[in-house]
Length: 448
Image (cartoon, rainbow, N blue to C red; front, side):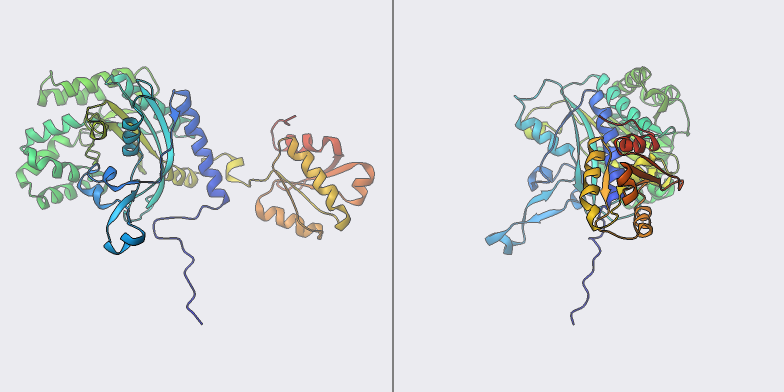
């Protein structure tokens, strides 16, 4: 007999059962609603891209994490790859902007909610296949763009039920200037940024070891830590003033941060904003402001920044762009652990189950189910005649809150018996009022 085949999905991927999908659709629905209220339009791109579209866009670390697709058919024996699963949604967006430059508005505001793939090491809340929820604005260098994006992200988290979170903000040119002050030459800055981007994961000592492993002298590494390690909870203006003392008050990147902070005071992002000189964001395509959402005890729930040079790789000229990506999986994990989902999302996907009293009652049960569905209720029908106790037990196992019973007596009186599985209460109502009775019991209005 052959060995039993494993039924587990590939490492770093998951099967999504009904409750998982309901939670995801709830979060996606909230995100989509907020994004559209901020004027962003939907976009979708293929799951895979030509490999040259992706390679070289994510830096040294990113290139290693791209899932490559081998050539097929007669070319399969070469072992070469010509396609790759998309690593993020930003590079495909840049390709789309270049491809359809004459068909999109001058300022193109898009949102995109699709899965991406990374050959990363799986961990809690980190997967190889996961969804990203992106917003991007293409076509303007105005700091209003950053403020608008951060306002949309803050509104999204608030609508999902997050009250306490921090929006960490920095600038790629501030990072470069601080590295210069610390004594890191231009040829070593990419390595330094890769190391600095790991600060949250490996701590100060870990970053210092990473600096040394990448050939950065101990004294220079220590100076970097001194410059980048801002006191927690410091007001944005205080951090900017301190940085101005190091880099000079006329530094253009600091002025850009000041403008963004001032504009965020006019929307919901301002109360959550923190200037964090250590925020690096490892992707190499960022050119200006960089930002990240962080929740105490959880870590990052998403990030983004300005990338004015990326579209130019496809178009041959620079196009200003800025965006943010929310990590859907991390948010769902946190909301599940904290019990943040509404009862109708956390429970069953069925409002009421109709029982079948006996074989002759099946048609009547289906008719009642149709009436309840037309009233806007989510209805299941038990598939066969069985003891009521077993049918109630089945409904309870699925978390169905209400059960409708049409026995011989109820049918003779033109009634339906409604049992509330949560309280155990049961009462009979006229059949024409069954939908309204269920809707009231569920705390919602009946749909005509």
